[in-house]
Length: 67
Image (cartoon, rainbow, N blue to C red):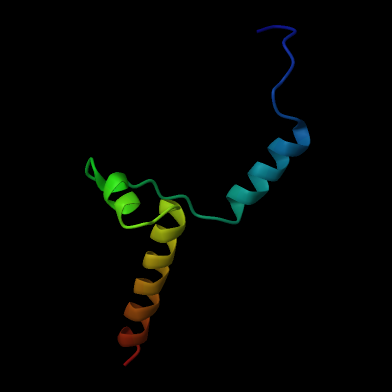
């Protein structure tokens, strides 16, 4: 490893650290076959789908909690 060039530049590493500071990371494990089920339903981007569903549900829950 000594003398081996780094694969990412310092600027790229700084950008990643900045991005991570401004976002929460949540790792979720689904039952086997979940990705296949999503694909069969035409969901091409599971991450986007999951983020949208969670955001929508949180908005709904917050709306009813205020009442």
